[in-house]
Amino acid sequence: MSKELVKEAVIRYLVKELEVPEEMIEIDTPLSVYEDGEEGEIDITVLLEDGEDAVVPLMVVQCLDDEREMSEAVIEKQIQVLEHIDNVTNVGRIILTNGEEMMYADWGATDPDNEGEIPTYSQMVKTFQEVQNKQ
Image (cartoon, rainbow, N blue to C red):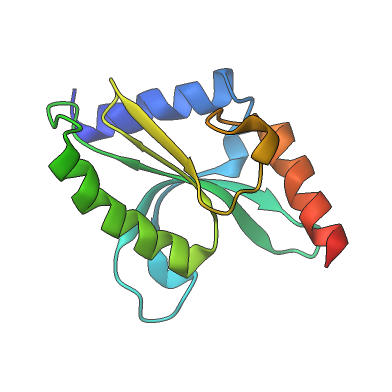
């Protein structure tokens, strides 16, 4: 399975298991969409239309080729990429996967009650709205 097949499998997972509407999934988003001049790309972005004609990232997924083992060295290297993506997007929720193994992090601690669990789309939207209402 190539990286593209891993992406397809992740999209099926997002739609079926996390109930993400297909139209709220974006593939291969340049980081420059979030900050001019930034290089790099987000493999999969789960989005929310925030009601002000703006689209907000709720979660990002970086995919590895399925033949790349998620060893400590690979994860450490990818953490740097993921931290950069998080700094540019302020998304907080990040998944790293090779199709066989999955690592989920909620760096924004947006779902403290569900630590370690990947929230459904409706849970992500609810949390986003609660945070927005507090501001």
